[in-house]
Amino acid sequence: MSGIGRRTFVQAAAALSMTGVMQTSGAKGQIAVSNSTGTESPKLKAPANAADCHMHIYNPAQFAMPPSPRMAPTNAAVDQYKLLQKRNGTTRVVVVTPRNYFTDNRATVDAIAKLGNARGVAVLHDDVTEAELKRLNDAGIRGTRFSLGDPATSVVKPEMIEPLAKKIAPLGWHIQFNMQGEQIVELAAVLRRLPVPMVFDHLGNPPLPAGASHASHAIIRELIDKNRAWVKLSGAYLNSKVGPPYPEATAIAQAFVKAAPERLVWGSDWPHPTSPGPTKPNDAALFDLLSEWAPNEQTRHRILVENPIALYGFPRA
Image (cartoon, rainbow, N blue to C red; front, side, top):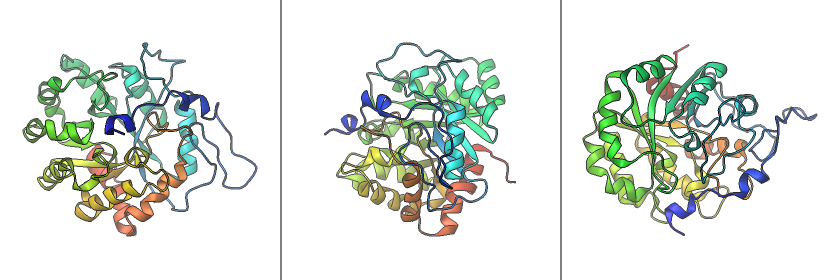
């Protein structure tokens, strides 16, 4: 199956996910969350101020979504996400505008305000005004995302990257990339000359079975070594053909942890809009993968606490 094919959104996933805001069950420590399998807490205890640096909010009751071939997850608003925080123990969060909202970032900005201890990543076109950028910056936005892995549903284009980078540079923002490893190779020259930091989603999405031996991994490592890039330890299910415990993703993650733990952040990717399904992942198990990806407690603290402070400007206390 091709890299893009592995990440194609499965229409049935939303229908099979749990519905409604689920409450804590009778068993101690058991918390059911919509769009997540299981109810147990992770074995790994999250440190104070741990950040989930990649998740999405879908709130059609308050912010309508335009028609899209991508089926949006249901029951994925702020109240449901707060239960995931309670289950996993994270307290800081980065809200990323999903493709279903196109360039409408109101749901993300609203979620930042409601969640507190939150930052955001918007989706923008290169014609965005300086006034709008200032408004978003004041609201907690710290970057803009280019999700290019599925051209059929992409709302941004590669030719927008450089013009938009020049506009956001004065704000100190970064550009977040969600694209396939092959696309990273194709756009390598553009990436090397961008005037802003870069963040690569989901382990860089290298094609399998190549994984960390793919040319895209070397390009990301080159940018990391020049202090120009970060990587999100997220989307394990997008980087594995065999499913839990996602051994291919573990190999890629461990390569990044060994090389540059100071340039990594972790993300849940809740409510898992591109999970290959048919059921949603177990978020406790996804969090526990950090024990294998980064066995050293000090390294995990850096990934969960210190690096998000550096990248997103969270307070130190």
